[in-house]
Length: 291
Image (tube, rainbow, N blue to C red; front, top):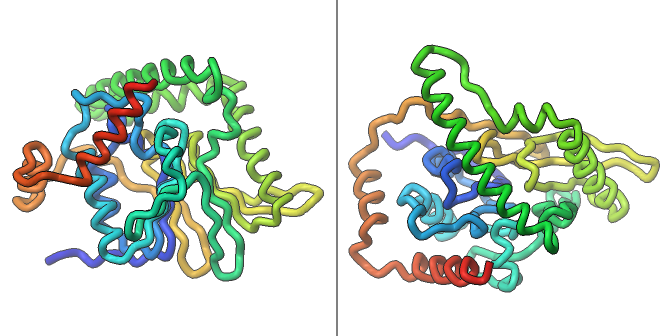
């Protein structure tokens, strides 16, 4: 029997980083197949153009893109908000293809409340100017750390030990990193309060969060959708309430259904010309050459 999908009014995903080793593409696909959202917001760093390599874009990663396109054809309104890792797409802001709108920010009216959604890299000086090169190198180092962490966790799992996150330990051990995250959240919240938004939603810092921020000028609900490298989180809106969804990390790979195997094989060697896939590859390829 085909499991019934959960109906979601609004779903916000960010920081998938498709095209990197650390991306949990299979879990993203599982999640997308489990929901039926009216609105799907992809809040930046969906395809990691900074680290894009033609030698590494597995069929599982393309399957995520196909699942998003499938939702759009089934009636879901998809908003793709660009981040710093997919900033090459910002030149196409305002472009609409069917139910997919590409832009650099989004304002929604939900039950009479104004919701401001953007990736958040605008607050990060390390993504601008000459510091951007260091950020790109840091991104490659982060991907290497995730790969190393994956191998360590395989050993820990073999010996029956609990998994660990090296990157989280690094972040927690550096006071400046903790302070930077707090400053990021407070800056986003203060700007939202000044602009009379009820809710502000960001990504970028890979830190899922839901909290009320109060200042002398008012208060705002600050939300962060986290990421699909370490936390595997999303934001879901139903019945006037936002919740952080936590997807389980697949420790043991389940056997795939024949239809899924055939789909993955098709993505490895397409039998028919994939026009959308060719356009995506062309955009990414041109952006990668200019970096």
